[in-house]
Picture 1 (tube, rainbow, N blue to C red):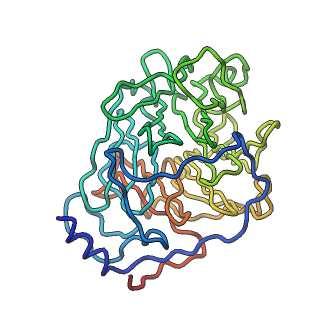
Picture 2: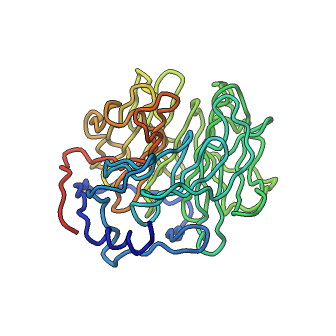
Picture 3: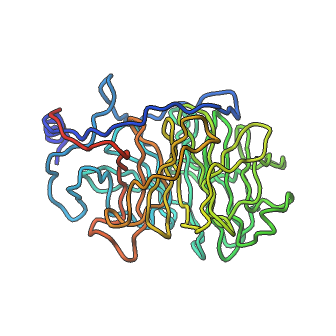
Length: 374
């Protein structure tokens, strides 16, 4: 399909309208004192343009048929292989998705996915390429930061298409489990969450990098300076999330005795916002104004916690947003255009749909999905 046809179709299509939570998050935390640069365009230098009023919502009109085309308008990307993380772009049709085998894919809703780059990884256990983040100066340097497993350790690297990865932080313990990491920029500083490598004692040990949340100020190449520890006692898997505009940073943590949603505040230990004694398998989180979404790998649910009074006070029990019947199981979540959450499914090797695995726009609870002419 040529570009002109796609634009003509896009201009005539209807859009899905989803209600947005209106409560404000209080108690913003600033770990760096600077703002990250906004994302624009894929790494080839092409720029995704949008109207001044913002990106249109996903199309409700029928899509062109194809083996990797999903007619559900909330499905934003398809046919992914073990997706582990995603970075939404400035519109609903594109995203960067990390695959555990080492590829970073650039996805388009109605065109084939394109491999942007590939890093060598060790996928034994639950390792591999498990997290990605864009450089705060991505417009100039085209750098991706990645959390990867090697045969001997887990590490953070930075890489740009066509170049070899440069090590930022190495020596993160590796185990039979607990090798997945998470990355989040706070201004120009990189926050890194590490798995516990299957060792709860190491997660509590201040001398170990396992099961920690770390701060790497303005990360360059590998340095002998030890990163600052922001939180300890992490579980087998931790996922970071925060508002793109800055504010509190949350940790979705698969703990040893319970799963927890924790929040980081400056100069204080991470505090628990909510805990799940039944250990549903927190896999990802995403922050919107006044609430945090969490995905659960064991139950297959996506839930939302309202936080109208600030980041440490949950207003009542979690609200179920999705169960596994609709899209299957979700892994990592992220916030995309219009401050709406998205997530990657992790259904294979037992796919929920022929187009699995997918990137899906997650509906807001209480908001009705309607269509209107564009």
